[in-house]
Amino acid sequence: MKGEPRGCARVLLCLGVLLLSPAVRADGTLTGDWNGGRAALQQRGIDPVLGYGSEVAYNASGGDHSTARYTDQWVFGGGFDLQALFGLPAANARITLTDRNGRNLSDDAHLGTLQEVQEVYGRGQTLLLTQFWYRQSFAGGGADLKLGRMPAGEDFASFACDFENLSFCGSQPGDLYGNYWYNWPVSSWAARLKLQLGGDVDARLGIYQVDPAYVDTQWERHSGWKIENPGGTAGALIPLQLDWSPAFGAERLAGQYAAGLWYSTAPANDVLLDSGGQPAVLTGATPLVRHGSYGGYLDLQQALGGGVKGFLRAVQADRRTSTVDSQVTLGLVCTGFWRARPQDDAALALARSHVNGRVADGERLQDQLTPGTVAVQTSEYVGELYYSWHALPGLVLRPDLQYVLHPGGSSRNDDALVLGLKTQVAF
Image (cartoon, rainbow, N blue to C red):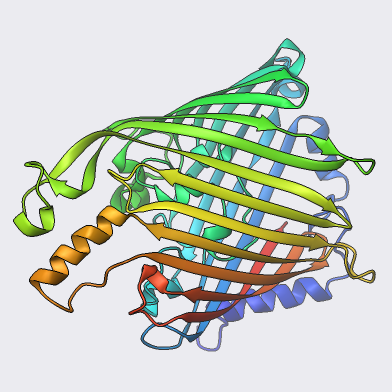
């Protein structure tokens, strides 16, 4: 209809209504307790979830033109206490559907970045079954087993998605090696076992189906929301992680320390050589197929006192099959620094994503054949600063500023300055 608000305008109108509404409840959601209905459901073992997140980004510099893009994600689902519902002791389940929409700045402005400047974009921009699992605890909570459809990044190398740049969001291996390690919103059939080893230490081991169909746009668009198992399983991803959760000093400053390894049994192409052991860029022959991919990671998060928390994360993958073979990120998050806004927080983070030197070797060879046509990649550097305004219970508005140095790991690409706004809503 002519004159009807669309896209960003519609969302801004909805936010305006919510901001002005006197009926918002102070229990962490915009819609409150539903006159006791939400609490009644939770007492019966049902915890409904409806959430919305959006990201706006504008490139003041970088790319081949300046523009703005908007992308979003809806989350529908809930958690289920199966003991309260059906009398199954120490058991619970979760079902989550996600729906993504919009376009992204990295592609449309041709920024050339290794990591998206809007992390919520991607994986089909469609309806997906993200969680469909059952979890059973044993030995008084000392062990638990989770079975079903789930993202690998949910339990391994997991990290919050408060930043807008993908370099600082979610599980690092899934961000970089997404052809076999699936992060939210993609899931695969899997099993995960977690064991308490005593004190503050636990271990977890998983096995996840690797199937190219899960990241095939056509399958996602038409069947991504279904429970069915798509054909074409290529192998299994097997991650192992050790966790240590200490508390230091008289203030009992909490830390979360994780170290992990993984191995994927799925075949993968060598990034440089052909099936005859020669550089594929020279011969044009079929790439050499490697049997398996592997890597390791560290995730260190520590409260530093005064509402400040620091993090340091690093991942290294094998140089046979990985285009980006390593990434290091570090940052600080400060909460409650403004007495008038005790829930608000601000953060600063830096990242370095390194392109495999073997990929660069192939680019040098290709550049010798056709001088000036191929950029030799090295490392991309990203910085992001944000401020979180907790406008209402269940509503966070987070303006941010990103700077990308050598997008794509190439000095041929203009550095990008990106202004963004991330919105998170829990209804």
